[in-house]
Structure formats: structure tokens, C-alpha cells
Image 1 (cartoon, rainbow, N blue to C red):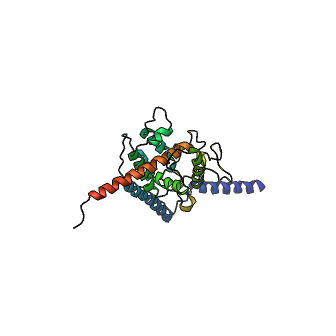
Image 2: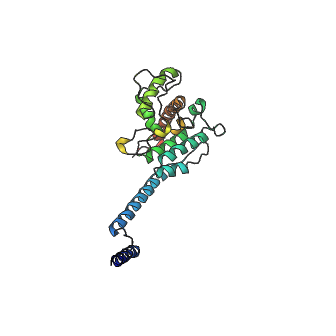
Image 3: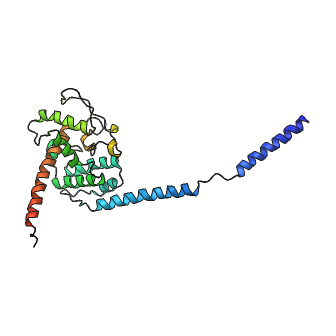
Length: 249
């Protein structure tokens, strides 16, 4: 009798397992499926919209540099990849491909046309949160000097700038050239989340050592000085063009 009971029990368990195997896996509801499709479509539409927005920017270069890949990465909001691509195109524009690093002279003579193209792409893609022009405004706000004549006195200003954009830890003493308070590149925030993102934090990779450690003070200082000079030239050119326009009748 006991044997018969276990035989029946075993048969019931086999039947239950067989039913589980035959039962179809639960399928996502129609509403969740459509929500997923709509989310993907919206995301794709945003990329297309940003891409169209950036298509209006002229990709001019004095050194025949191709900026299409940078434009595409920025349109897709792939900030870290775009930041590293920025270093690549800047090395090309500075004519430092063979050396694969910047020097002060190359950045102080960086072609203005290329600087304007790179900046326009970053500013437009980030809706005004990233770009060299954004960094330059912050730089000027901490009394950044437009010359390298007194480099030592400029270090303190640049330390303030780097704190503002999130490249270094705040210091509670007078900064010096040998301070080791700079963040490694991997600690930077590559998410554009409004108030959670440091204004002017990117582009940055071009100004860190290639292993991602320590920001290169002198390189970024040189570029800010160059940007200030280029900006002055752009304003003069724009003023001359406006003066040539026929007056309205």
C-alpha cells in the first residue's frame, strides 16, 4: 500500500514537471513592448535631430583635418569617445602627428579656423555646456592672463579654473606647479545631466598625459591664450564684414 502511494505521488510530480515544460514562457505585455519601441524611436529621433543640428556647422580646417567623426560622436552624445577624438584631430591640426604630443609653441599657434570648428561642434552638441569658448569664459572669470609672460603667477589662476571645471581637488593653500591634486582622467564625469555636470569640463583628454594621469597645466594655458587671441581676430573680422553690408533703405 505504501509502495502504491509513492508510485501515485511520483506520477503526479512527473505530470506537474511535464506541464511546466509544455507551458509557454510568459511573454511581455503588449503595452510594455510598445513602450520599448517608442523609447527606442524617441532616442533615435533625438540623435537624428542633434545630427541635423550639427550638420549646419561648417567643418573648415586650415590643415585639411576631417572633423566628420568628431561631429558624429558628438551628435550621438558619446562624450568620452568624442573627447578622445578631439585630441586626435587637435594633434593633426597642430601638425604634431609624428610627435603625438603638444608643445607650448604649437598650441600658441594653433590654427584659429580649426579651433573655431572644434569649439562650435562641442558647444552646439552640448547646448552650451562644453567647449573651449565655455572654458575660456571660466578662465577669464578667474582673471586668466592673456599672455605667458608671467607663467608662475598664472598657475594659481589655472588651479582655480581646474577646480571650477572638475579637473582637480580644491586646495586650501597657495597652489604651485608641483601640486599633485589633479584628478585622473577616469574620474571625470561624462554624463550631461544638467546641474550634475561641471560646466566646461570637456574637452579635457588633450590636456592630460596619455596614461590619463595629471592635467597638463601648460598645454591648457597655452590654448586658452590662443583662444583669446583668435576670438579677438574673429570679432575684428565680423565687424569688418558688417561694415561692408549695404545699409537698409
